Length: 102
Image 1 (cartoon, rainbow, N blue to C red):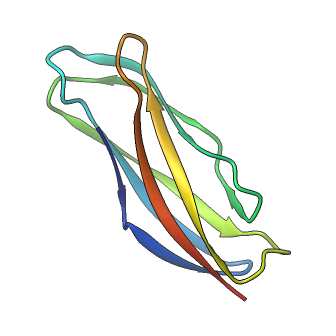
Image 2 (image 1 turned 120 degrees about the vertical axis):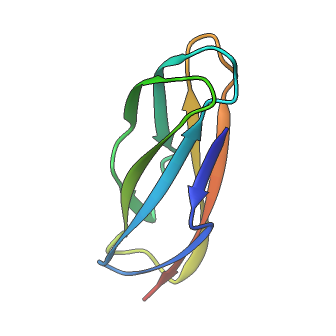
């Protein structure tokens, strides 16, 4: 499963915010080579995909992403989606609501 904390965030133009994305292995086998990626949105700049090596069954791993509103972004609310993929496991997703203020 995939969880984003906090669920909502407000970002001012040219300012940074850090968000935490938690991947939990709910299966009974270790998950390997997990790729955690945010979906590209033109109004929000963020870090690239992150790779998690191994997560034991029942355990969780948290990774942090820094997001920033684009210089030319207008005041709006956007949804930033994250996906976690691993070979042999179903894809997991979570969403973060980002309010951009000018």
